[in-house]
Image (cartoon, rainbow, N blue to C red; front, side, top):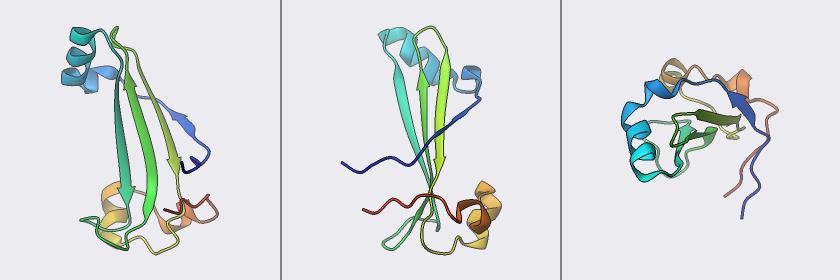
Length: 99
């Protein structure tokens, strides 16, 4: 198992995800969604991960998120910087995640 880089909490409103809220409530279980941001689009062999995010929605509608920037050890494309707002400067000095 790979170590997860240090995480930071993020603020989110569960009402932004109504279908996930309905699913969590209907099954009375927490629903978790992972999101990866990468250095290229589409992600292909040789891409790097720039951010890892986890969204948890509880059956009562409470939402929590945790995100962590990751140093991809490669340059982030201009298109991805425009899309995600994550820059090469943002990830410089952050932990790496070697697969």
